[in-house]
Image 1 (cartoon, rainbow, N blue to C red):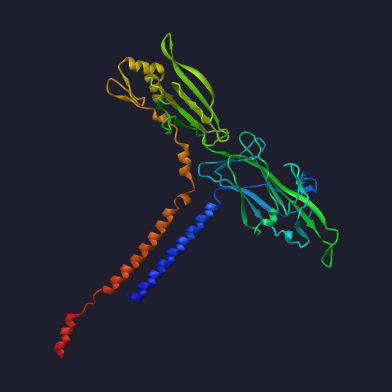
Image 2: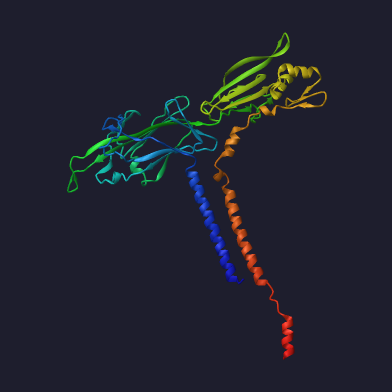
Amino acid sequence: MNKGKVTKIVSVVVITIALFLATISAMAEESEKQSGNRYYLGESVKTGWDNGYKGDEKITEGDVHFNWKIGEFYVDGFTSTVKGEDNTPIFLKNVGDKVQLWFSLKQNIDKLNNDENLSISEDSNGFDEYFSVPKTNFGRGALIIRKTDYTNAKSDPIEYKDYLAAKASPNADTEVELCEEGDYEVALDYEIKNDPRKIFDVSIIPTYSNYKIFFKFSVRNGNSMVYPFDVKTKGELSNTSVTENGFYLDFANSRYLDINIKKEVLNEGANGLAEDVRFNRPAKDGEEYTEEGIYTITSSNRYTGQLTTKRIYVGKNDVLKAVAATGLSVKDVNDYIANGAKVKNDGSIMLTSHETIPVDEANIQPNMATQDSAKGDFFTDNLLWFIVGGAALIVIIVVIIIVVAVKKRKKPKYVNIEAFTEDQEVE
């Protein structure tokens, strides 16, 4: 193979790899921009005119806004949805999910529904009664968003005035907000001008109508995890852990979980040591528990039905340590100890026969946060392997082609010696 052919092959390889990487990069960017399912929200209704957008009339035939949409709102980046009591959608997210609200403009706001007489008008004295937004210049469409947090505190409405005019172009999806846990109320208020009567481009008594798209939705964490940490080492404690220092709870910003904690201690009774429940109450984020006892933490998610239970032992009592670690009853542990068994540091029990009753691994709850992180988006999480694998495959194919070509070039040309000798003898 000559040098020119090798150069051409190398050039093709470089261009192919570059195109491959560019394609993967574009796909990854699009996947990052909009991930997960889509859920569309809201539809336009007629509100009357200059009444604070408080009306709620269905758009019927004969209305200038009949049978066409100004745009669409949708939410993506969630794992699943459930319905609230008032049929409001609740979007459940896991670790790594980014729940986002988007708006897609479907119209040329200067020529609505391809009608030169219809346009989005500037609402110079707009106000919104529901959100208590006073009279102001809404511009050509006003987007209003209000969030209510887990304490039921409503934030001040966020106003995006002149929203429709600020959109770059129709059919361009624009991110409105990145949504964390909470309840959301959204309204797009806009005014349509109908100008069918013109004389020499001068409007003759145009008419105006107000419309809105209004909807509600909620965002919640989909897991049911609460995380106990050692008060001194700050290390996370797994189920059946033993600590002499005590622990505190971290809710990991999951504000809508039902979390209870039960404390049990050993009291001297007529039949020896027995478990005694000291309290069973709702837990608090960041609360510390340093007194001796077995603590059972129960975390439930009312939206998914998931339930997670962890047991932590605080103190140095061998009986309680073994009860927490093995799941055995106090009576059983006492019986083993009475027969010469020893409780090890991790709570497992060493019998006189040198057999061990191990920590009850079956009771250990899986680390759901880790599961959620690993779940992720397959394409995004494995993007590097796609790139490396694809590039490597291309290089291998090209190398094989070059090797085959070089071998063909070096293949020796065989001469028929006998024929050559015969020719010489004839001469």
